[in-house]
Amino acid sequence: MELKPIINVKELHFAYHKHTVLNGVNFSLNKGEVVSLLGPNGCGKSTLIRLILKLIHAKKGDILINNKMINDYSHKEIAQHIAYIPQYHNVPFNYSVLEMVMMGRVSKLGFLASPSKKDKEIAYESLRSIGIDDLSSRPFGQLSGGQKQMVLLARALTQEVNTFIMDEPVSGLDYGNQIRLLELISKLSRQGYTFLKTTHYPDHALLVSSRVVAMNEGKIIADGKPENVITSEMINQVYGIGANLIKHEEYTRCLPIFNKGIL
Amino acid sequence: MTQIKTIALLSTTMTALVTIALVSMLLGQYPIDFTTLIGYIDFKLFGGDSNDTYALLDNIILQIRLPRILLAILIGASLATSGAAFQAMFVNPLVSPGILGVLAGAAFGAALGMLISEQWYIVQALAFIFGFIAVGLAVLIGSMVTNSRSTIMLVLGGVISGSLFTALLSVVKYVADPYSTLPAIVYWLMGSLTMADLHGVLLISIPMLLGILGMIMMGKYFDILSLGDEEAKALGINVAMVRAAAIILATLTSSLSVVMAGMIGWVGLIIPHIIRMAIGPSHRLLMPLSAIIGAIFLLLADSISRLAFSVEIPLGIITSLIGIPIFIIVLKNARAAWN
Image 1: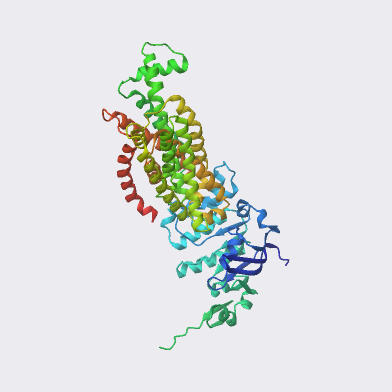
Image 2 (image 1 turned 60 degrees about the vertical axis):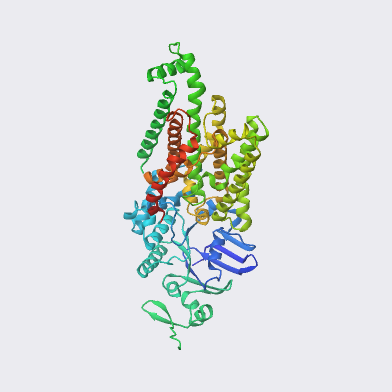
């Protein structure tokens, strides 16, 4: 199958003050893929996705979205191609779930236009497709972490784009919600959506990714099929711990080696 | 909220505002009955029958009460919409027009104007200029300390800028003539609508109404801005432009309110809170309702100010005395929502 690149990153360099964060990153995201960015804290994964969303600007290197330079896009135009799902968070004003989800429509509206009945229907449809339409009138602030993350995903669906970028989507969620969210990502990817997500869990990357990109110290150190990238050597190199990769049913699972240590 | 409910809510509150304005026109040292007022309006607008008392009403209504009522409506609406806009911009339900130092800057400018000139337009121009300088300084301090345009640093910049202009205002008061200029500055700073004249009010109403309408139209962007800069950008908002436009509009309207009536506190803080408690936080409805309810609030406060006692109590004192207990109630009830 021919790969159709949505995002292309070429020789990207980025530094905060004098601290180098990205050091010559080359990366692409193709249509239909689920790519997991893996790496330790501070390796540059979050910086890479923030650069792709034009939330910050690179000093050197190119980012292309659908073969067009990122600087030629306004934020509104990027939002018409890519939806960003941040980690769930608190909002200072207690919007209802429906109001939160409707905010995904803003990139489709003109300057003076108010959301129409159709926009509202799209918002309801997004909530239904994730199975949380019963939450629509609840205050967002009173939801559990898992529910909030689902609402942010529903909001991304209302943007009517095919590419989603998620920053640590399971962060802060309980075990059940972590797995349910991964299942939802897997389901949406089978419906044709493309995902780029950062994760701290090699095991999660093995469950839902079509490709894994491992980063360390501002560079991509491996890029390929999950089973090829996530190896005992890679875990040891990136995280400094041992791990066993075990085949269980149709998935390879990653089990870290627990060292009790010597007192 | 459905569209029908929204329209019903806006038209009910608007009717309440008009009714209160009409009633307030009847009340004062010289009471006017409702039939006379209707006859007078008919005479003025549609050329109805004349009456001997209408010459007197020309003076009382057109020269005294109408300008004052219009100014109360304009200032109440500006302060409340500016407050709601600032709260959305700073992602902080506890800020008000004073936070960027606008009120202090404008007050210093106006006091300086009173000190150096007797020309009212110089007072207005200086209030205006220093209102904007105060915001500029707040933004400068906010962005000097850190490269990222942090909301907290901007608020801190506003606090510093506000304190600076309050200190400078004290210097002006200190050197002002204690028998003429100082009492004028002090009385004006307490907040008063007594200086309103119809021509001046109509003139100032153009920029004020444009500012208020501009902020109302930005409602849907304020919702998104309140999620934080990065999320707002990712949803497709030009954050820098929306924020700059909101700062300019909110500063313009609040500086003009200081020029016309001194420093009137609490309106910008409590009105958006009360509305948020009643109908929720969506700015598409919060902004127009803030304008209407802010206008009603200040109109009522001004009526108390001129009617409650034989001498007029400065408006700023009335809004503080009403505003503080309301804010305590709101604070207690709203705490759960913020957490």
